[in-house]
Image (tube, rainbow, N blue to C red; front, side):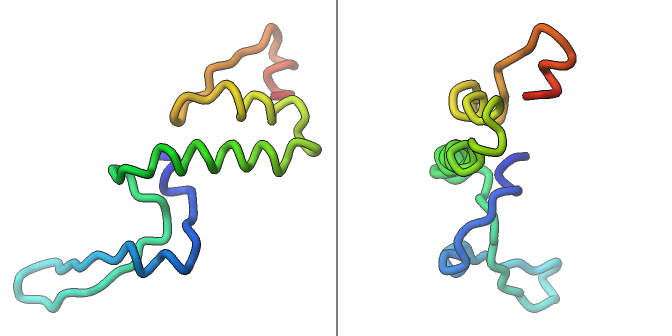
Length: 91
């Protein structure tokens, strides 16, 4: 899933702490999540904002693909196509 590929700012890691233990006989461990977490209210917006920023940052290197990222994504699905295999590879 796209969310686990998006790193969050290190200063926010402490805001995503979870406590976990494998069994009731083991001590709890604390973990800090370092990626966008699926199921949180902000996850879809963070994912789309990340894609738009990527398109803006890389537009010079990928002039054909940047507008596709900016305009043709719905959540983690891209909704575009090409007439030929060559055009699709250029995207």
